[in-house]
Structures are given as structure tokens and as C-alpha cells.
Image 1 (cartoon, rainbow, N blue to C red):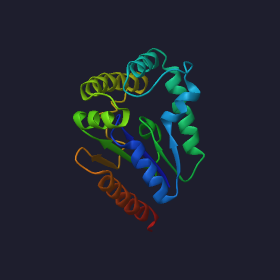
Image 2: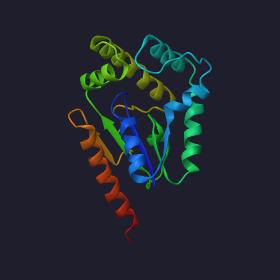
Image 3: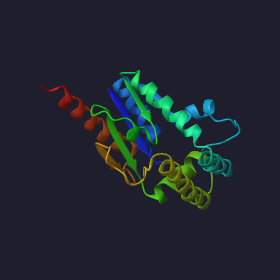
Image 4: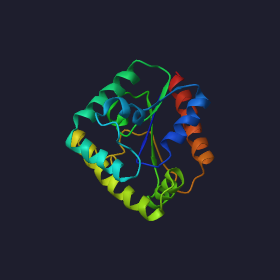
Length: 188
């Protein structure tokens, strides 16, 4: 079983992937964790901060690092049978009808509140960083692949707006879908 969870920052990708990884006994792979190995500047921070925005600006002007990460992800997923990953772009790059692709959405205000809790910053700052980060992130993937990561939903088998869902409800919904999809693909 291969599952890809995509979505913008603070939509719950990592939380969902960790839970589903345990539930289904899948290898958990986080695309963002590979950045430390790929990026030349090791002091970049990828969360909502000035350094995080600087990292995105650097990436926008040095797209080769995104390509390197994406190539690594594609090879890694191709060489593993039981894996779940959180990735911003893998769902568009992996053309496999058996890979379960789920996109998570949440409104900007909800995502900003999640960042306040996660990163311990002020709501006003979180909202400002999220707007800037979304704009830069969408530019990167459009420039690289002509993909609108916040609008092009064609590769996804399930799109979940979890703005008003608990973590448990989101996981239960996705888990149920995965079980039904898996059973459906094994049926004659």
C-alpha cells in the first residue's frame, strides 16, 4: 500500500501521516525532513518565520534543490511497497492508479491558529507568514511543474477540508476511505 498526503502548511499532513503510519503499519516518510540533507544553507528554518520565508525565496531562485528532493521522493516511493508520505508535490508526480492520494485543506485562519500552537508565535504573525508562505510555495511549484498546488485537485482520490474537524475525526474519515479503497482494489 502506498499513500501520499498533500496540502498546504498546517493542514494536518504530518499529524495524519504519523497516525495512519501506525494504524496501517506503513513506513513514514516526511519530504520536509529531507530538506536538511539537500539544502546548502543549514541555518534555514522551514516554519513560519523570517528565516522560513528566506528559505522559500532561496528555493524560488534555486529550483534545482526542489527537483533534487522530488527526484529522491519519486525513487524512494518507487522502491518501497508499504509507505505513507507527506509531500507537497508527489501526488502530481507519481502517476499510479493504486497509490492513494489524499489532499488536506483548511482555511487560512484555522491554519494560522494551528501554527500559533505549534510554533508559539502570535496569531497576527502566523497569519502574515502563512499568506506569504502560501504565495511563495505556490509560485515554486507552478514555476517548476505548472501545478497550482492549492487548486489542481485532479490527482486526488479524496479531498478533506478539516477546518472544523478534530484530529480524530479527520483520521477516522481518511482511515475509512483507505480501507474501502484497498478492499475495492483487491476485489475481482
